[in-house]
Length: 228
Length: 223
Image 1: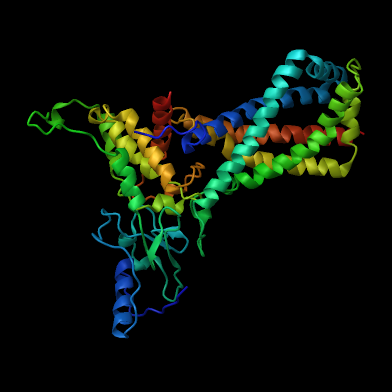
Image 2: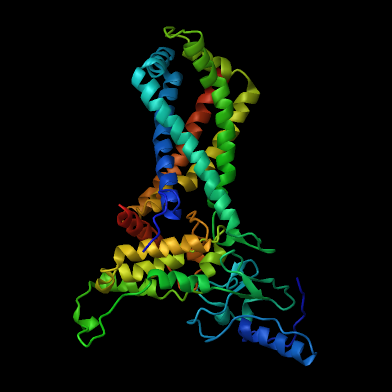
């Protein structure tokens, strides 16, 4: 564990900008900067992944680390930062973890097959009940950051997988591969070494996109009906 | 294609089986409390009901083995799930605030579950083992008025009563999460019924364990 003192931090800075200030200083001093994941810095890519003061993405709710502002902390505070901890997310360096387990889960079934021979139907031509469209959209807002795994005491990926299963199971385009999808994705989730869901609800509270536990119940139903 | 794993080698099916065995035990507890509560009302009623349960062949040779299997399965599956969950996070967080996002009960089902299982060991020692000895070794099946006296005798000891009370506090904590969590595990969750299930879960988790506590204290004070 390393301890750094950082000064000249504005309350308007994002958490990642504070990390930038620290790293610039470390580089100037000829030291190794702290490695961390980041990309869009506007809360939509799911890259940033820090466990800040005992919670994924820090103490704020409904935000990613890049959207967390330093005004959430007091001057002189000691801030504890760790990488996501899960056997399925091995640490690459410092605060960077390998989340390719999520990619493999998506590859196992998180898609719809579309005929691209020129006869493909316009998706908007298929009527979809408003309620289903809204639920599917809510599920599709999952950015795959892995905060659910980080927050869960069992490192379970059920919230992520259930969001991806739900967004397709609720739409007509997802019906053809519906059963195969949930079986394959749950199988891959188990193969990756994620834990079981204890229904603590920590994932839902810490999710920056507010993905609901309703999705986990839906995936349980999807899986059980596909299995029988 | 999904691999053709064994029926309990899938995380969702393990949780499904855990939930079903838990709900089965929830129903059993209610039946157990109902019969025990008659001991507060009438010794004769308690004796006749206990004698029926203790001698009826369907209860003894069909329902009791199912119950024993349910308890054993719930215990073993709980251990299996706990080991798998621990292996999913081999390196723990140095600094964590789980109380910010989840209840103590939901995070410590294994602790409250083990405490309840330890209590079951005491409970079997107190009532089940003497019952088995009397019926299957000594061959005594026809004493109809012994149950109330045996119950009172056990709750004569204040330490035993205190242990029972403490155990039922753990059972209450276990049920507070377990009851409503079982419905989520079987996929039963919707806006219409889930708020009711959560309320029912809390009521059940308080009323049933404290019903048993009331019976233990009642018989202790009655002597």
